[in-house]
Length: 41
Length: 256
Image 1 (cartoon, chains in turn orange, cyan):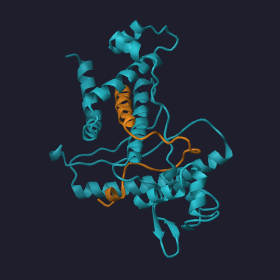
Image 2 (tube, helix red, strand yellow; image 1 turned 90 degrees about the vertical axis):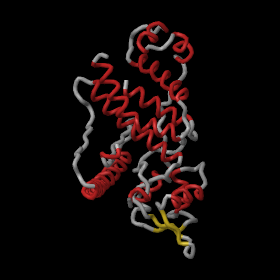
Image 3 (cartoon, rainbow over the protein chains, first blue to last red; image 1 turned 180 degrees about the horizontal axis):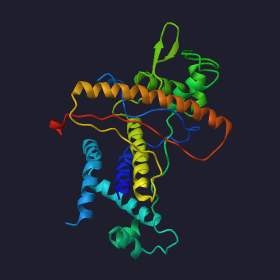
Image 4 (spheres, rainbow over the protein chains, first blue to last red; image 1 turned 180 degrees about the vertical axis):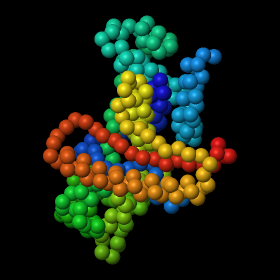
């Protein structure tokens, strides 16, 4: 149930964002929510 | 209240508190979240009913939703695609592609090797200037106006705070982490690696030291695995996607 609830909430978030950019080539890389300002905390 | 309800309330309170705070902060109301959750409950019941006849009554009983909600939502698709991030991809290619890996600084325009050519290699439908500006705003690259060159400053891409890209990373990183943990719980034998270090009674300074050490080691590992994944994909074509990551969180327990 946890999975369903979390994904549901995340989808609700995604629904209000811009369209997913998925027409590019293959995915691959490193990234996340951490920002440079957070890194020098 | 039965033990199952106590257990589930603990899971919901613990795991969703931060996400609900985010939704409130972003103005996403409870009705919008509820509608999305209804669709996912129905999808989950369908997934767990492989080979069974899927009537509205069955889905209603499995999910606790009213039949009219089941009838209205059962055929609506749920989002399953995973976004690719052109900025993260560009940073990766810059560090792994033979034509670029030894060049920390590139001319902004012109034929390969150049930033423009690299950006076009990643996305043909987005102007290189747009990619450049996003990377520049995130301090992932720097720009020398006199030489008109772009320099790579970071080994990974962290989107601007509050940007849509950052929210996409939040969704997909947490989504896959939750999926791995939930599948471990639902499986007879845990399938995925999922571990965390947890301590209390530390000073802020000591917590900060642990964070710096973790950050350095995990970035080293992620970069090593990234390079291996690039080589693997050059040699073999497959259909699996892979995500592994790390996080650090610490807080003064007196503020919780």
